[in-house]
Length: 163
Image 1: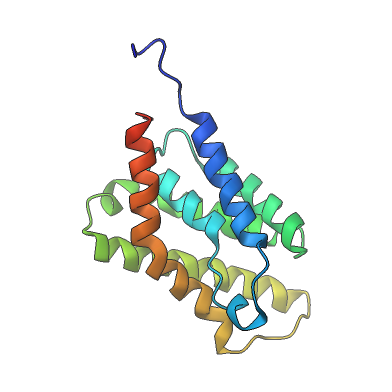
Image 2 (image 1 turned 60 degrees about the vertical axis):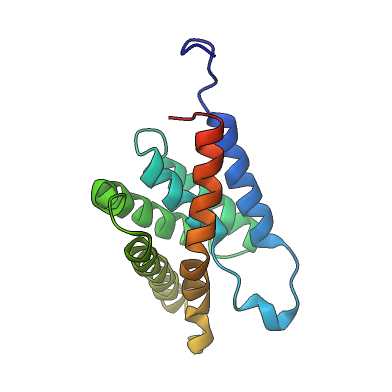
């Protein structure tokens, strides 16, 4: 396909966020719910690293608002966390893209933990109860899932030549 005829990839990016939102609300057994990663944030981090000129803080804010609506959390809680993580990812994207996968995974763990910390802070302001140690497991699960998520989204991006 010529450069003029090639699709710009907005549909694939949108579909990846839609799939992430579906995975976020997919019913799980109660014992497994504490391990559910923030799929939307993982997709956001990937697209911010891969296409920083196309996916930014505004997409982070919007995806976070959708997360808030779907999960019934305080409106703006995930929006703030996603926007902050998107901003930091954009600021660090040139560095993080060059890291070996294990260092990227550690960086993603820090970003996911920061999002959890911001949500915990907002919950504290709202007077909601403080969570147990299991509150932090989604960040760890998300970091462990980062390599396959990265490979999947990178494979799709390369297959459809999105850039």
